[in-house]
Length: 117
Image 1 (tube, rainbow, N blue to C red):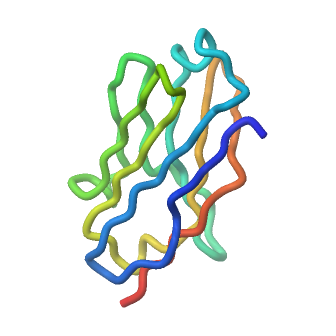
Image 2: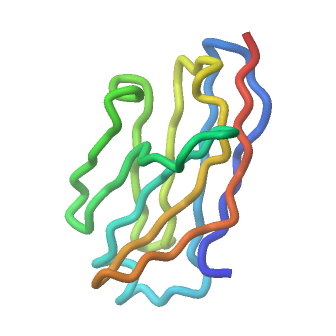
């Protein structure tokens, strides 16, 4: 498996979760120049970008999560994180870790995040 997510779960509205994604089979020289990030897919909806972070550490966020979510990466540990605060029921989805380099995309298997009202 290229990417392994963890940290999902059930949380009440207004709560927080921290997602983590590891790339155990990716060598550092490939992980470091990659853009990595998170997408999510709710039931019956398309998979949409949540946040990405470039090799230079520049983040990009979907409008719906700006100010609530923070993406970060650790190039030594080959991990990417998503800190999610002030969660709302509309954040309920399967969250997928993503890595892109040279036009090739890699995906994790997803972790479920459920926010109860």
